[in-house]
Structure formats: C-alpha cells, structure tokens
Amino acid sequence: MLTIPLFIPLVIRSALAAALLAAAFPAPGQGQEQAQAQGQAQGEAVFQRNCASCHGADRQGTGLGPPLSAQTYRYGGTRGDLARIIRNGIPSQGMPAFGEQLSAAEIEALVDFLPSRERAEEEEEAPPRERVFDPVPGVVETLDYAVRTEVFADGLQTVWAMAFIDARTALVSERTGRLRIIRDGVLQPQPVSATPEVYVSSHRWNQGGLLDVAIDPDYADNGWIYLSHSHRIPGTGPEGQPLAMLRVVRGRIRDNTWVDEEVLFQAAPETYGEPFWHYAGRMAFDNEGRLYFSVGDRGVQELAREPGRPTGKIHRIMPDGSIPADNPLRNRDGALPTVYSLGHRNPQGMVFDAESGRLWATEHGPRGGDELNLVRAGADYGWPVTTYGINYNGTVLTPHTRAPGVTQPVHYWRPSIGVSGVTVYRGSQFPLWEGKLLVTGLGARELRLLTLDGDRVLHEETLLRTQGRPYEPVVGPDGAIYLVTDDPGQILRLSIEEERRR
Image 1 (cartoon, rainbow, N blue to C red):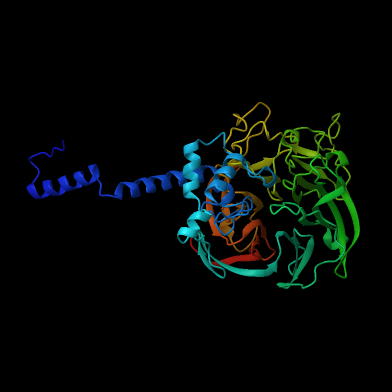
Image 2: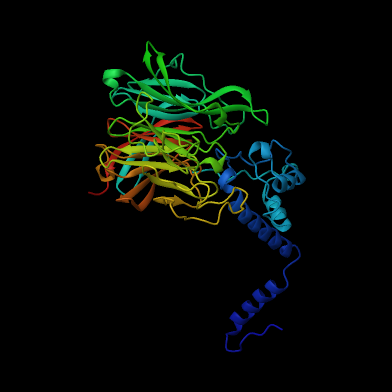
C-alpha cells in the first residue's frame, strides 16, 4: 500500500500520490518504452566497453575498424548476421570473437543497439552522431595560445610522414609508395620517380607501404635522404599470403628522381611474415648522427623480447648501415647487433631531443595500454609479458603490468587513443611550449600537448581535434607545427594567433 505522511500539504500529497501511482502502474506501452530504453543503454554500454576502440565511440569507424551502419556492412547486416559475427568474429579481417567473453544477454543487447538491415527497412536509420572537429581554416583556443589552423597541403593519399630539407622544401611520404615534394608551400604535381618498390597489402586495414622519411644531419654536404618501407620477398607463407618486413634505405633526389640507393637494413628472409600490420618504421637521428628506427612485432608478439629477432625492437645503425661500436647487444651471442631496445609492440612515433639528449617513442598498445617510452640502451619494455592493455576481444592478455628487468612506460593511455607520432617542440612561435611533447592519437583524432618534469608527464592537453587521422606532428623551421593527416590526406599548419598568458 502507498502511504504518504499526513503532515505534507494536501496539494503536494495529491501530486506525490499521482507520481507514485504512475511509477507503480505505468500506462499501457510505457513499461515497454522504458524496457527498450534500458536495453539501448545496456547495449551502448557493452559497445563502448568492447567495440568503440576499433569502430569509434559514435560507430563512425577508425583505422582499426569500419563504420557500423546498414549502408556499410560487408558481411550481411541482419540481426542474425550481427549476432553471428559478434560471437564468432571474422579472423581474416582482424575481427575477434566475443562469444566466450560476452553473455548471451550482452550479445542480444549489443545487437539491439547496433543498426540492422531489418530496422533500416522498417524505419529510417538514425545516423551515427556527427564527429566534432576543430575548424580549418580557423582559430582554436588552448590554455596558452589562440592557434590559427590552415591547410598547408591538400590532395595527398594515405599520407604518413613529413620532413623539412630546408626552410623552403619538405618531403612527404604517401603510404601507397609515392614520395612528394612541397616547395614554397606548393605541392609539386609529380611525385619523385624511381623510389623503392613497396609492398601494400590489398587488405582494407593494410599498415604497410612507404612509411617514414628522414633527412641526414649533414644533408647540405651529402644529400642523403632515408626512407623506411614494407618490403616483400618472393614466395608466400603458410596461409598463402605474401611475406614482408620493414626495410630501411637511403638515396638522393636528382632531377626529381630517386638515385644512388643503398640498403641499410634488410632482415633475414626467415624473419619475414604474412601479417599486414605492425611495421612501425619511424626514424630519428641523434647528436652523433646515428640513425634509430623502429620495427613492430609484425603480429608475432612472443618474439618482441627475443634479441636475435628483428621484430618488436628499436634498432640503431650508422648512416651508412654499419654498426655503432657501443650498441648494447653488439657482442652478445645470438643477438642482432643493431638492436638498441626490445619488448616493443608497434612504435609509430619516435623523436630524439637534441637539447636533452633523450630518445622518446610512442607505442600502440592493444585495447588500452598505449605507451610513451623514454628509450634507453639495452632496455626491455616488456611486450607482451607486461602491458596496461587487454586483448581486443576483452580477454586478459597478461595479468602483469610490471616484471623484474622490465622498464616502465613514462606515461600510458587507458583507454587507448591510438597514439602515433611524437615530437618535441623546439621553436620560436610557441615559447610557452618549449621542451614539451606533441603526440597524435589516431583513434581520438587529436593533437595533444604533454608537459614534462624530467621524465614525468605532469599535464596533458588536447590542442586540436582533426577531421583526418593525424599520423605525425612536425615542427617546421619557422616554428609552426605541421600536422600530417590521412582521410582527408592533408598537412595542417598551426601558427600563433594570440598569446593568452606569459
């Protein structure tokens, strides 16, 4: 029985009684609407926990997974198809199975939440929430500055990296295999000819191709340019797919043609593999002119800590490919002499800070566990024995975040932001950011600023939300920040509009 205290005034008592009766005895159809709303809320919660890291928080798709709508499904799209794919996965497409991690009720709630072809036929499908990104051209507000954004170059295809030769000239890599030149702010119409042949998988989530570009510290005297790319050898693997690995070369550009090529690093044929992901490939020079480059685990994570295998490592060589005398594993039996550090998953960002003498690297984690690492000679960063992430299907990859002899990340992101490029700001336009780190997130599509105290991250600020996936931030000779983005393939330029504080 519903009882209401007599000391409450009559009018209020009447209204309260009506509300209590409505809650206890909902009108016809009202209880069904409430149940549907609760089911949608449960389904969205399951989606955000398990699916958003690959398919986007608003189902808009990311570099790891396609958008989810009745118009974009490639493998059916009915309620039955959705339930089957969630339970069993699509291993050939990198979609994990969730049948053992999600209950039947959770799978049903997830199917109810996702758009299906039946629903699209019965009613107009609600589009995914529109992504919000900052205007370009336009001005964005940060804690320290109002920052002007503009398109520096447009019409690029799967752009991945950028490097300035001088104040007037920059090189840009397109993952499809083209090396482009920007001169005086104008993208030259013809790519550089005769560049290395790259292997690009036909898979829609291919991560290989022409990757990083780096300029020799003595370029003015020797003209050397360094490229990293996925390289294929003859034959196929057990699954019938081509065999590929990261390779590093150098050459010169003469009359818009790649010439004088030399192979600096090419792994042994038996280390080539079939996966189309985790090449890494970022490069950086230190103050002594030694070249560092990263090689991802290539999908075979257990080899990342094996010193005799090239994958899951950061390597160091001299500009001509020879081995530095003080490389940490040079004299260890069974180890590759090029190895500088090990236990990495997929380091897609790397920068050497000439002023501090520190080598920084950003590394993709699995689901959670993206890392910022301060890279030291001979250090083991633990993958896959330790990580702050889990498997994409929600299972535990390892219970350990620490282990004896394993170097901890300086900073990690959980959930993942899809961390990619990193650089240190050293320039004239933003003096309040001097010595701070700029990192990009592919999933979040953001440029972030990290404030440091030695090797500690004190503060993190989102500077810009981009329409395209931002692969790399670069500080130009003019002190502006250049941001390489894909989809659309552009280079954005960030310059000072107004200083907020001193």
